[in-house]
Figure 1 (cartoon, rainbow, N blue to C red):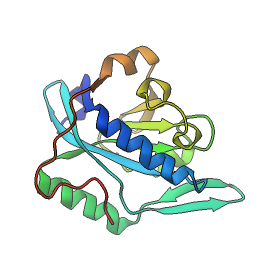
Figure 2: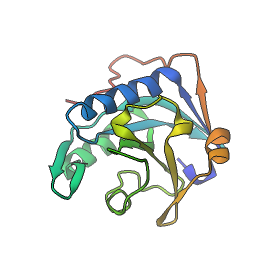
Figure 3: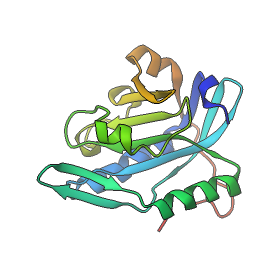
Length: 174
């Protein structure tokens, strides 16, 4: 999967809705949450086929909030992607206030493929379920570059047709 060549990311509205609902659920306990968008790419297009919520440990301390995904879980994510014939296209996580890519987000990113995406949803997901209102970053080499609103609008195409899931597909890992 060559994400660096991708110019358009197609995602069904029901996956965007599922993502925001998961982040709001984490937010009800004043915690950040993480959802992974998995899919395939061909040429200049990636299609998101599933939104997975990996097992994660919420972190709340005097210095802030966050989440931790274990090395074991990261290995399982990789194994499941190979088994299902998909790749990790984007990570989506929430922040308690404004949306931005923090230094912790840079250091502990789950997406490590050049051209991958990181979307940050403000206010624990309490706002609109519209990608255009989120902060969107793209991995270029070793650095996360913020995409402009125009780039986000031309890259992410939200489709009204629901994503269909094959047998054994799951959107939540327990």
